Length: 407
Image (cartoon, rainbow, N blue to C red; front, side, top):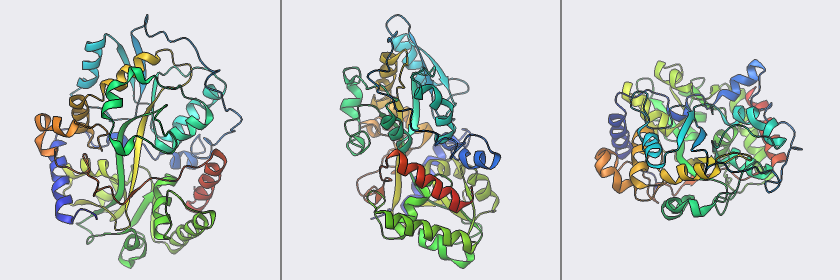
């Protein structure tokens, strides 16, 4: 059962209040860059497919861990995805002070496919990439695991993670024991609309069929986001569908494209279109919309009647990272409830840490009951991930999708 309209508005107002004075954009700033990259002929969605002859045996592709003698690490993350006060990052500064480890923090993960293209030649050849932690979304993290490009984590260095990781994220199909990954934040994909230009839109069925929305909606350019909802419209389970169901869902999307219902496929740039009224409703990430609402209270976000798309971004240690133990210490630092709450209060995505909700009482009480940060089982009852795919099948599905959306 989904939250009602009134409770969702209250949640968004609380988060909007918490976002005052912060930049808009957060984690999703350039998340959809792969579509524009394709249009420009630079490495992107199809360029990232590459050859899969670069599979490594992670046990054979190892180097020394210099953590004991080198108190440093390099952390690659998405833009606007950590707490900030001016140029300072308080939670990161706290880690550095507590451990004596200096962190070089880079915001160079702008898109999953784009980042894959940056590192595939080195990791595929068992060469270092100069990073100790990288942050990637579930499906790309799964691909890295299948290619043997990630180091297995030492859980003895992760006591807070072992104790405080929320139950719902403990056993994803692509890393059932969390041997290679630690969730950074999670999020949900639903529908946003601009109430200044349209009435409420409550389902993807409406989004795709209402004549008053024709040519005024956008969908996301990442295959897993948009096709998850096409599968739901087809009556299929996005976590366990057949090849026939995939093809039927693809045909459904092709029909919507051909009818002119969809204005375009976007990354995070739907923000500009929605604010300006160029689109009046769209597929959207919850955290982005929270930030948008600070400047524009006409922007609404709803849980679609069909369900939600649920995803996580994960901390990973690539092969030949030279400071693995230091990286594990940083992962564990963010699983202290007070630190996790500090981060969640800024980024406004789903917090993966048990105890953070109670810690939020002291940090920002207005966010304690916000189900877009601390969802309960009822809120997530109709949330879906996307089916785990082998490398060859994912390549084919990405190509199928790119062809239909005209990339």
